Length: 613
Image 1: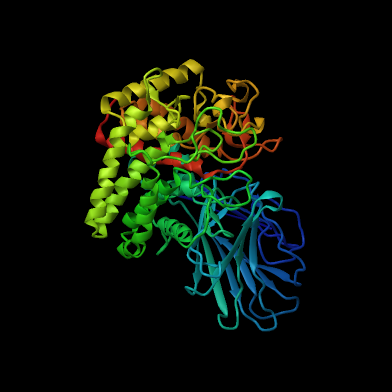
Image 2 (image 1 turned 135 degrees about the vertical axis):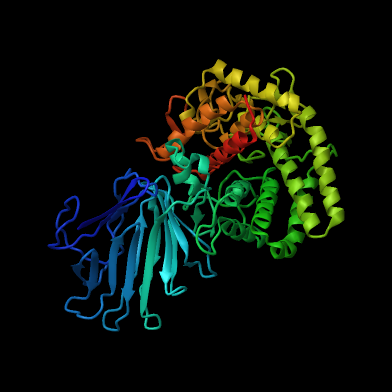
């Protein structure tokens, strides 16, 4: 039976529960009469913006064997009992305005099995958002977020009566599974509510502007919890990357409460605590089973951890957590500073970054997130992140009443700032290079995001910032990149083979010395929303609002259409694309893309400040 419940607010919103039953009259669209053999849903859909945009999402059947059940409709409720049982139903599932309700009753002769929502992540990269208990269960309230579709806020009555079980796996045995336990003799009645909601920063000026629908519906997309790692990750079935934690934290700090007593920053805290307690993440030596690893922490890992910690402490005003963990934070900061082996103020990576130093068969990964490009030694991106991290540490040290540390970190930040521009500015291209290798050479491939973060973080002299962005826009026009609905390329010209780490053609490697035959594949100039925020932020910073808006609105339209997700017929995914739109990604859903949504806040703050082109 299909139950369609609709209502109007700003737009009309329709919820569809497809409950398969025998001989029941369908409301709304007709559904075939099929046997209902278990309590639960076979498909559902919702659109948190009320636009009726999405087809029903199929749900997998729970594992067999199933206990015998008899389904009976009573109004908009479908009740499930053992055949012949006349007492209260073990489950009653219904759809109301803006919510689903799963109600369970205890009976010793008809005890309820759990209700399971089992989603194929190839259809939708769903995730549960909440906090993990010690046994891996998730107390309520929590959110079920379906990227591109919207969010269900889940609560239970009586409060604390039940905890959800959550599991997910990637690869060939992929699934995202949320389990709602039934009642017990101790708790004879449980009622779960799954309410459609939208969680994003409330900005009155854009509330009725449909161009920002992709911002509203997808704000939470950056948060994906891997239940087996119990950490924020690339997606629910993928890796956790320590050098990404600052991205989660920056977005979490701008996120309204997810539910009563539940904050996105608390998920950041749990992820950081896992690292503090010794868990490894990608970017650290010894993580996972990849043949290519890191000889030491990637150059952007400590900065990312420190920024994320600062975001959490300041955003949640958790001084107790600061005081308990300050020695570990100081240890991170001091290990980061210790990589400055020549005293010029810039942090260093263990590998030289020299052209030709990367073996044909990958042994080690380079210095930062862009792990197929040969960043090494002095990395412009990691140093920009370190500059911000040192400033945050100075503030945390002050709060922790560690005046000497505060002065030391502030001095280190200033020393880094003084060295930065002179080290990385390329007088030939008139933009910042990506890295300076140990042999003193600059490696410059017109990296948009490197220049963007340096400008946005205040590491470029003000009179130079606008000129750099002018040169980058001119170069972008010269090379013919205009498809901003695909995001932005990381680099505007091919990274030469001698500076490329992964020579597999699948990941941007080519046979030609200039690597032009690998260009536009994956990180070798592929288009993505990942790190596009920094280019947009820099454009807004220097008053180039028209150019920034042109890029931003094209990306927002793509976000609204889930344009950075999905898989093509060849198994490649939309998180990276060639400039003609050909897919070259592999995750299928990569949270870093959604950091770009922060650009909406940057845009609106720029408008408030009255900055002009």
